[in-house]
Every structure is written in structure tokens, then in C-alpha cells.
Length: 216
Image (cartoon, rainbow, N blue to C red; front, side):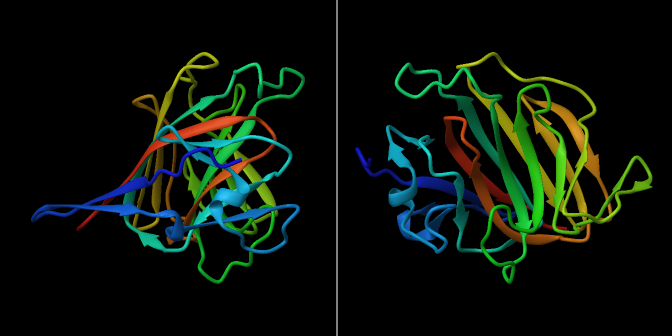
């Protein structure tokens, strides 16, 4: 599966200087429904041509080893419509998760907050494994998987790149899609943690994954 190993960069910024850190393959691990244990990222999905390319039958995720607090996460994604991989028979579905507690066990899907990437609902919050928050002044009740719909739509057509920006700061989370605010919550119960890219059976590409630390 592995064609050419690349590195996915995370960029850390602070008030004094710009500090760049590139995460190597050792900074991620893979987990799939077939493995039931942590595996090397390249055994789960392709790292090639400056992208992470997720396709095949192995539903699962790539998870950071590190935990992050008070940050802005930006990345690009597109649905893979190449003939070799494209599946027109299923509704496109994926997601980016964050604030996944370090002690949360690996399973599909772990505790945390998901920026939903899905046809017609990209930008929804999904609060997993009893994570709670307030949206528009209303408390989201704890549950296994609770959806809080996006405020507005802004997804690019199939095959085109989309830009996601997630801001998590002191319990307030905002989600942007292609430069437009699409969701926001406060008083979230999970304020820090790991980050994952989810693969849910719809071929998808990710690139330009960057993290900016937020200071008071």
C-alpha cells in the first residue's frame, strides 16, 4: 500500500517566535476495526504525494500520540473521486476528532469531539462518549453519540479541496469550513486531548495539517 513515505507537518506558533515541528511517522499511530490494536500508520493508510490518503476496507483512524490544549488546528480535505477508489454507492462520511482524552481507550469511535465531514452535514459537532457542551445557550445532554447541527453550509464540490479550522480554547470550540464559521460551543467537558483523522469507508485525502498553540 505504501508508495512513498512523507511527513505531515504540524506548525506550532507562539507570541515570541515561529516554531515549526514536523511529525514523522512515529508521531502517529493507526487503529482499524480489523487490527484491534495500535499499528504503524503506513499499515493502515497511504502517506504519498504530500497527502494522507484513506481508502479500502479498513475503517479506523490515525491518532496523534501527543495531547494538545488551547490550539487552532487547520487542514485540508477532499473526497477521493479517482476511478480506482471512488464509491458512488455510499454517502460520503468521515471526520476529524479532537480533545480525545489521553486515557480514552482505542475503539471505533473514541471519546471526544468530532468535526463531522459528511455529505450535507459537514461542520456538525458530534459529541462522543458523554462529552457535553453548551450550544446556543442550551446544554447538550450526555450520550454515546450526540449531534449538534452546523449553523450553515459551505462545502466545496466533490474532488475539490476544503479547508477546516478548529479552535479549542478554555472550553470554547469553534469550527470553520472554507473560512466560514459553521458551529460553536462553550463549556465543553473535554478541553484537551489527542487529534484523529477518521476513515469511515469513504475514500478521502488530507493534507497541510497545521497546529497553532493559543496563549492567553
